Amino acid sequence: SSSSSSSSSSSTLPRNRSDLRRLHTELRTGLLRLRSYTKEFDMHNFLQQPCNQVCGDCGDSPVAWASWNIGVTLCDQCAGCHRALGTHISKVKSLELDQWSSEEVQSLLCVGNDHIAQRYRIISEKNPDFLIGPETAFPVRRRYITSKYTDEPFDLEAAVAAASSAEQNSSKLRRGKKDDVEFLHKLRASGILKLILVQGMDLPAKDMNGFSDPYCVFRMGEQKLKSRIRKKTLNPVWKETFMLNLVSSADLLHVAVYDHDKIGKNAKMGEAQIAFVGEGHSVPEPGKDGLGVHVVSMDQLQECSDEEPVDLVLHLTRRGTLLIQLVFYSLES
Image 1: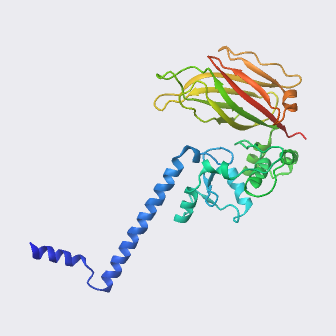
Image 2: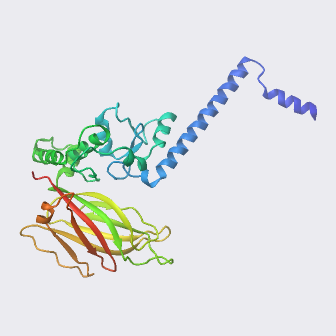
Image 3: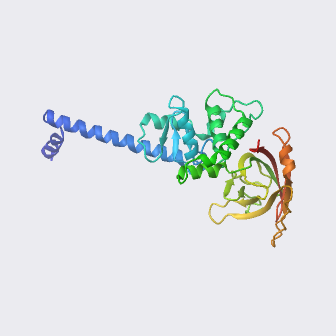
């Protein structure tokens, strides 16, 4: 038995330089595979975090890109803005198509979207808390991102004026191009509506523990935005900001509050509607389900500002209220 064990052990040892090179190649290949698996595992865990599943600049999803040196995941539009900054500022790669080195992965993993808001802010005296959303017009988006990652000041009035100018000159764009159609779709707005979801009060309990896990969904036309989930509370505090394109004063903003459920279907806790009524428009009638309409006049929106927003208390259909604030940035300047 001792002779058999010695013979088997000797057979695994390299007998010459050729065997030694082969063993070295096998070890090196195995190490590379291990590093590749580790890299893929780390990237997978990073992208499973909810904060990294949305764009770190505008909050849109899904994300298909990332700036690995800044450490932020990006949607298609914001990735284009980052590429325009130049590789000396932002190094953008596809999460699906590009090859990533271990150094690039580690650089991305060391930051993440949670820390971006703390590291980078726009430079603006009038609108220091301004944020963009998934439907923000492209000229405003590009100026915002440029200011956020460089020392260039952000001028909201100049940005919306550029968006208005682009809309007026849209007929000069080449017809039939897919990118042009999508670009125009983002610009077709009479203004940008900034919605601040402040808090909810006295919401209904949906869980066995006497609480709920509420979140809000905002819909206007094809635009849809979702807030964060607040755990185990009937009086959630959000203080989240959203951006919507207000195409016309005939648009209705639908607000719904849901209770998040990990197992079953998310239960609706209540809803409300906001009508932006301009001159010559009538207030919509309440629906059969008792869903009333909260009216905000366009005159109110035109006169509000970041310092003096429109405060609105929404009474939900079933129980409870939402406190929101509205600020309007007109493109008709």
